[in-house]
Image 1: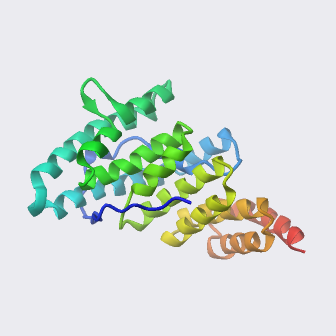
Image 2: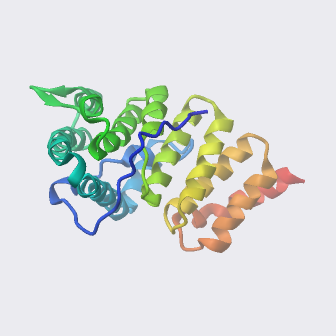
Image 3: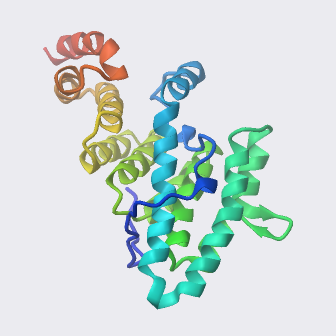
Length: 255
């Protein structure tokens, strides 16, 4: 199981936003549904485009929060780190809207033409809020490159007080463990994602993933509890559309 290695700094959210960082739906890879196939993933991204942008906005806010927090400690270093992170962010955004994607994912990690990628930001500015945030981006890039151990490593390094983003990061770790066929660890992190933030989007999404994974692990009663939470607590969610079928399956297996 991954172990979180905190750097001793937690960025604070502010009411500002950086327009340059609020573009492109770049975290689509986090939300791949368990064993649902590429077409369903694409449909999910289309349906939830606005929310993906909201997640990105919260990421941008974290950058600003980190700069404000460290203003009187290491302002020049933090400002420099934010500039370098922005260059890496441009490459990150491009990787999700162009092709071939794998090469662009690697560019976003490694950098090009003298510009740092996410790994460079981490190596050179790891003690800043921007360096911490680069761990999140690097983890998402490795997840899309199917380098699941690296995805777990970098996402586990990411530390935030933003509960929504914490939920997304832990859910992504769960996805990586599932891809490694470490199903118990995957379930553990889906539960962490559920517990990190209660909201109408990530909570039912990770309840569904946890429930389907629990069924695979022959934990039908646990799966049933997750599915019933979707049915009764999140009846308007996308996951509620097919939850009755999942509840029926769990009830049969639980007998």
